[in-house]
Structure formats: C-alpha cells, structure tokens
Image (cartoon, rainbow, N blue to C red; front, side, top):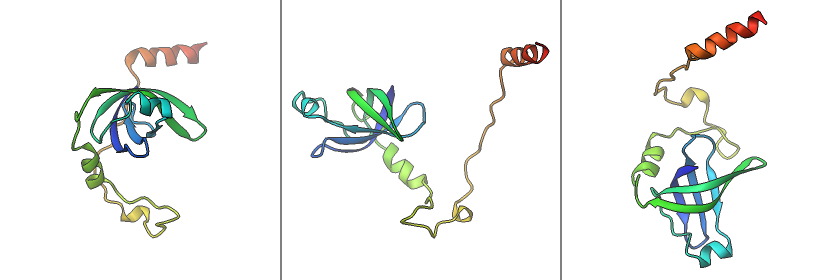
Length: 124
C-alpha cells in the first residue's frame, strides 16, 4: 500500500498515514528494531510504501519504506483547511447542519460488462 504521512513524531516513533485507497487512516508505531534500523524518519508530506494490517477497529502500517521525501508537503495543511468539524463526545455542539456543503458526490454506475452479468443472473 502507498500513502502520505499526515503527522509523525520521531521522538515517539509514531505516524499517521493517509492510504491510497482513501479508507481509514493507518497508524504506524515503530518498534525498537525499526528505530535501530533508522527506518523511521518520516515527515508530514512524505510518500511511503508499507504493509497494512487490520486490527479490530484500526489499520496498522508496518514495514514502511520511504518512496519520495516531501512528495506532498502541503497535503496535511490543505486537509486541515478544508476539513469540517465532526460531532464527537468532546465536541457535541457540532451538528450536521453546521457543516458546509461543498464538493460533489459522483455516483459510479456499473460498467456495461457488469450490467450484462447482472442481467444473466436474473435469468438464471
């Protein structure tokens, strides 16, 4: 999997990565081995490749490799600038009505080949 580092702490050996599949964020927590091998040295905006594991309700990145340092330096700030508040236990006052309506949702329709398969399934 490829992703962009949104936040990292070299002192703690941790990072948050936005994954290429635009699914949940992946969390990296360096082990002592990672730190000794100098594998952890990522900064915000770095493009990395990593292995991904799903653990309960969290995605974990492991075996990270730097692909291109500073590939997307403005991405973390751009996400913060366009982000909207989300209701949470710590901030329950934010409602869905308070969110700005921007962006466009584009529906994906099945390919012609998929439509044929669906039609054949109904005939069977």
